[in-house]
Length: 259
Image (cartoon, rainbow, N blue to C red; front, top):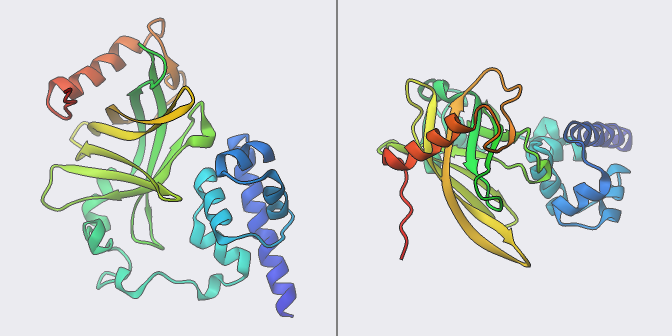
C-alpha cells in the first residue's frame, strides 16, 4: 500500500516538472544545462527514478517550482511537511521570519502584483532588457516571493524572496542557488507602483564569469504585450525606458562609484 502511494505521489511531481518545462519551452538537454547536471540525470528524474535532493532543488530553481512542495510530492510526504513553528507566529502564518524583516502580509500587500522590469544589457551596449517579475505571498513559508518571467534567456530566470528591513527605505530581492547569490536592492514601492535601485550578479564575459552591477527598475504593470524583450533604440518605448533607468541614477536611488 505504501509503494502505491509513493508511486502516485511521484507521478504527480513528475507531471509538475513536465508542465513547467512546457511552459518555459525547455528541452531535457536545456534543463540539464541550466541545472548544471547531466542529461541522463534529468531523464532519470522524468522517469520517476531516485535523484539527489540537490538535483531536485536545482531543477526547481530553474523551473520556478517550490522545492519543499515538490519534494513532499516526490516522497509522498506532503501531509507531514509543515513550515517551522516559528514562522507561524501569532497571526497564523502571516509573519515573515525575523531574519527577513518579520513583516506581516497586511504590511506588504501593496507589493503583490506584476512588474515591468528594466535593466541595461550586460553584453549589448545601448540595449535595455525588459521582462516581467511577479511578486506573490507564499503562505507555506510566510514571505513575499518573486519570480522572473518572459525573459529571452528563460533558463536563467531567477526566483527568490523579498527581505524588507523595518528601518530602511530599501528592500532586497535575493535568489540563492548552489551557493551562488544574486541580490537586488531597490527602494520601497512608491505610490506610482515603482521600485528603483541596483542589481549585482555574475555575467559570462568571454571565457570567464565576472561580477556586474547596473541600475534596475520595477514598475507595476497589467499589460505586457510588446513591452518585453531586448529593447533597442528602434523600439517605440526605448526613450521612456532609458529615461527611467537614467532617473534611477540621477535621482539618487543608486550610485556606481568608479576608482
